[in-house]
Image (cartoon, rainbow, N blue to C red; front, side, top):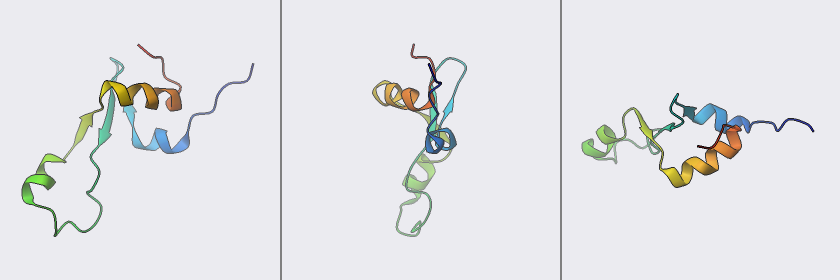
Length: 67
């Protein structure tokens, strides 16, 4: 049986931790930042942990083991 290819967009956007959680970066930080409040820009800094419901979907695209 052939191996399943990883979705190339998914492997660029997400990272799987050693415990199986998925890290992602917040959206809305590319352009038009003058409109955003300081609080919004500050809160979307750095990676965040994805919710369990979305983690199951993304792990299928990455071909990671589901826990």
